[in-house]
Length: 201
Image 1: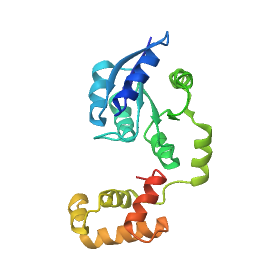
Image 2: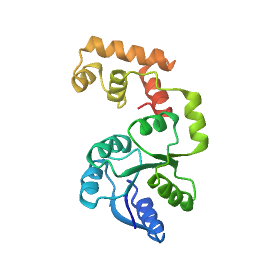
Image 3: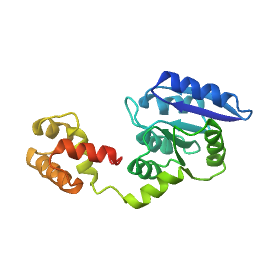
Image 4: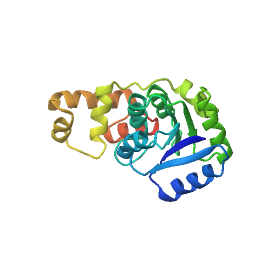
C-alpha cells in the first residue's frame, strides 16, 4: 500500500484529493497538512512513500519543503501538484529534488498514475510545461538578487530590505537595479510581477 502525504492550503481541495486517492486500491492518505512548515514533521511522523505538495503555502513553500524532505526523508518521492504551471517553478522544483510536476486541472486518474510512476523511479512532468521550461531557460537572477526582490515584493523600503537580507542599502539598490535590468522592466514592482509570472520567486 502506497502511503501518501498531501500538503495543500485550501481545505476543500485537500479533502477532495484525499477522498479520491483513498478510492485507489493501492493508496492510503496518511497525512494532510495545510501549512508548509508542517510538511517535514508530518512526513517524519507518518513516513509516506509519496508527498504531494502545492507550491504556494503558508510558511515554507512546496519547493523549499521538497528540498527539506530530500534531506530529512530521502526515500519519500515528492510530486508537486499546483495551480501555477510556471516554467521557473518547474525548474526550481526539479532542482529541489521533486520527481514530478503536475498542474491541478488534470483528471485524478492522471495523478494516481503519476504517483505510481514516480514510485517506479520515473520523473513525471506535464509535457506542455516541460516544453515551456526548456524554451524559457533558467532564471537570470542570482540567488542574492532573488532574495532581495522577494524581500521587496510587499513594497518594503530599501532600509527594510537591507535589514531583512543583511546587506547594505547601497548593495540592495544595486541588486534591485540589476533585477529591473534583467527582467526588462521599469521599476521593482514590475520586476516582482515578471519574476513571479515566470516562477523565479
